[in-house]
Image 1 (cartoon, one colour):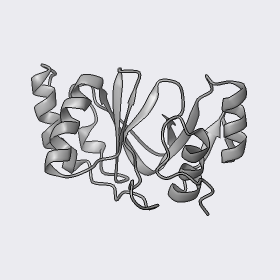
Image 2 (spheres, helix red, strand yellow):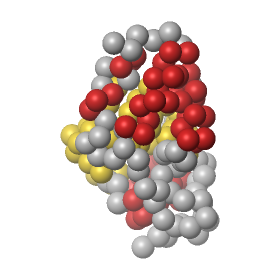
Image 3 (cartoon, helix red, strand yellow):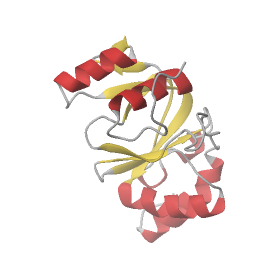
Image 4 (cartoon, helix red, strand yellow):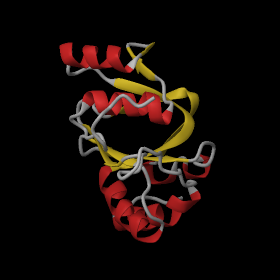
Length: 169
């Protein structure tokens, strides 16, 4: 059950984000290598704002690209395919969330990293320096976005990689 009252949650709305992850998306919240509830995570973030909130990549693959490549690809993706859940981390990387087990073919292209499976973890907003560009939920209803396959990203990532001179081989 969703306990956040404001919709959609924003990056500064810690409680809203944490409850959306756990309640709507079903993502486990991890802090200091242990699973926590949204309220425990909120309390910890209040007492130590530099704490990182993690989740596992059990229900999706995370495709992590250099920031300039990700932002260029994001513009093309949204024009061609519609929203693709993604977040930026401190102007260093952009992380795209795609269907589970679909991103292996992108591994190693121009500095692209892939995290997949329950053993892999990613940091989430409201962790320091991380903000959603396109959240994995619909802004007008309390529903999750359908994840696309990594194949939907491929052409846009190739174009963005060419723009920034990255090796495609």
